[in-house]
Length: 208
Image 1 (tube, rainbow, N blue to C red):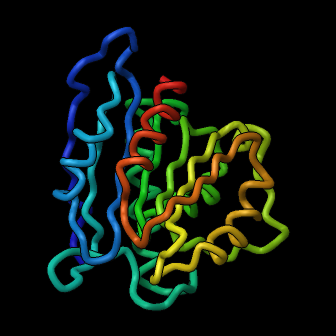
Image 2: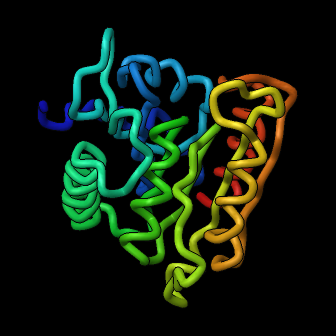
Image 3: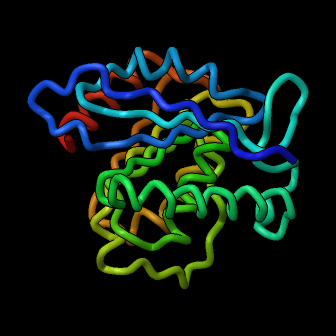
């Protein structure tokens, strides 16, 4: 296990915004934060700062947040979640929770949704692209403040790795607890599409 490697990208142009919003970015399995340097340029949201992360466990040519086990009892998952909780608390001191957006793709999407559920607080927003979502118990209860957090979730209709139906079903347990959850499907596989980025850009701009 390695520490969470971080790479900060400051807002290039604040425009009419305050420039006080931060997006914490989590990659998918076997990837690295370097892939998301391009993503931040493509998203191109005025006044948004980015904090890109590497997962703590080495996986082939990249890093992973957990292994093949999808259980929350998995030791790698638990360690990753512990590190993410600490990071979120650290960043909240500087930015404030309401100014922090969590973003994740695939494995990273699962981690940001679970981090949101565990933190149970009002964040700026949570973005999960092509996520494998934890099957939380039906008894999950979000606080009134956490329910104010908007969610943006997108998935490929032909995803061969994480079936869209699985994501829809498991997301419902969380989405029913919040006031705003935008779920969109795209005619693609397990990937990030330009149409998805454009929709996310519009969603983000409404919240800056």
